[in-house]
Amino acid sequence: MTTIQHAIQDDYPDSFAHCYGCGRLNEEGHQFRTGWEGDQTVTYHKPEEKYTAIPGFVYGGFLASIIDCHGTGSASLALHRKNGHKPGDGVEAPRFVTASLEVKFTRPTPQGTLIKAVGQVEEVRENKFKTEIDVYAGEERVASGSVVAVVMPDNFAK
Image: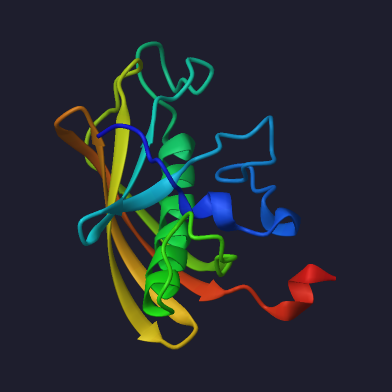
């Protein structure tokens, strides 16, 4: 599978759907889409050529961005599932923000390759989740990361 039918980002409230990485309402952004494949979370994206580090290779900041948004999207998926819901069921999804982000680059990432982020989610507390993420370009693991995500505080809506 290389597309997500019903991404968790589709169920974010409009007021929180403007993130440059995963906001479905941000026409200038990446619009990453995160969903389930079994018990793992996945995001697929093919970076545009403008995200070049050196000719032929993807800029590392792009990979950090996909890890960041995949981490918060994965946390949202996990809490949504815990609450008895799934993407596309018409229930607004919980929104998370990043408390910490760790990125490790393992190999240069070739341009023109579909990127796949795969996550494993662990609940730390009721409002905090940790996601371990591996990023692949084709079959090669090119980066890994860890995201601690917390439920977005109510005062963010003001």
